[in-house]
Length: 120
Picture 1 (cartoon, rainbow, N blue to C red):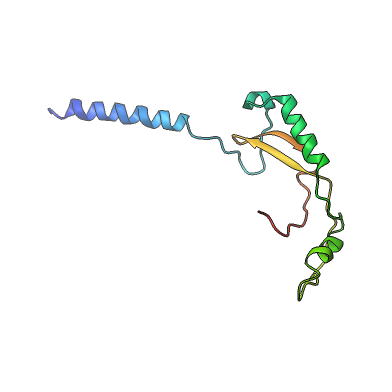
Picture 2 (cartoon, one colour; picture 1 turned 90 degrees about the vertical axis):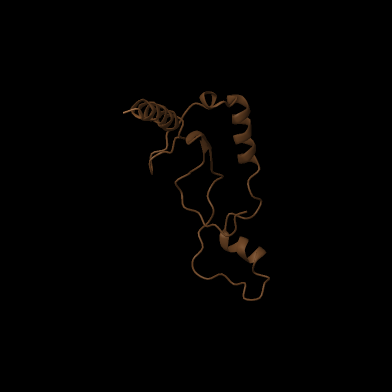
C-alpha cells in the first residue's frame, strides 16, 4: 500500500508527458489530401514567396522541351547512349513549396507526370 501514491504519481506524470508528446507531433497529411495554407500562416512573407515562384518560372531549364532531343544532346554522345522506349515532352515549369506539411505555393501542373532522368 505504501507504493500506491508513488505509482499514482508516476502514472500522472507519464500520462501528462504522453499527452504533451501527442500534441507536439508533426502534421502529416493523409495520402492525396494535402491542405493549402496561406503563406503568411506558415511564417512566409507573401511578396518574397511570390518573387521566388516567379524566379523559378523565369529560370527553367534551358534544355529543349523535347526529351528525345535533350537526351541526344546530353547522353547521346556516350557509348550505348541511344534512348530506349518512348519519350514524352517536358511540361511547363512546375513546383510546390511545402512547409510543415501544408502547401503554401504551387505553380504549373503538379499532378502532371514528366520524365525524370537524374535528381540531385
